[in-house]
Length: 332
Image (cartoon, rainbow, N blue to C red):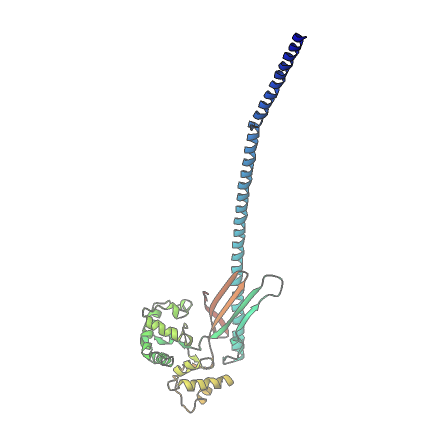
């Protein structure tokens, strides 16, 4: 019995060792099973690569759409800009018609006529399309002292230099600057083409090396103009400062009194002007004063979408027609 018992005990211990070994081996297998297999590593890399490809493709597509939107916006802006030029051309033609009809209906030009009424910003279309806006006005080109009158075939004209001197004096400036200003203008115009379309439109197109002369002209900018040919001053539209300079013996106070009288009733002719100043017995050279105008300056602005055009044009009315002498774009 003892031998048999011992044998059974040995067998049981052997079985324990036999069963313990697989568990230990099974545990070892469990530990080794936590390592990443080559197949799963390759799958993860493929996913990352796919995400990178998608991101890169998204960037390319987004860039393409952005460039296309820029191109579309550029084309749209160019189209709008072209539209503003066409609209401005229509506005100029419209004003030409008004001035032509005004010339046929009246022998005088004054500030109560339709052409002199400024146009506030007005919408040109009343439908659902993008709005186009027009604003601007017309000024009498002969309402100021024409600096072209200073220049004659033999140089500066003495009588016109005196007129400019009186204007400088009225403005509180040194009338002695009139002569050097006339010399600069004479020099500038002598090198210009005879084609009036390239004639300087304003004092900014004349080079003044002397800052004092330029500053003097800036101070009287509102009272001077530059036209392609010599012209008289329109007494119906000229400010008091210009009339005081144009007449040889009329003070600024008397000129303002004359303007107040004109505002109540426009001058019918030159004799009407002189009659209202009969107590002063005013003197003005022949051909230097009128009540009608041949040159008009149109200043207009067109806005359409993101485009804006500001343009100035000189119109010349003669023999029943109105011609465009020049056009200039005005920078804001």
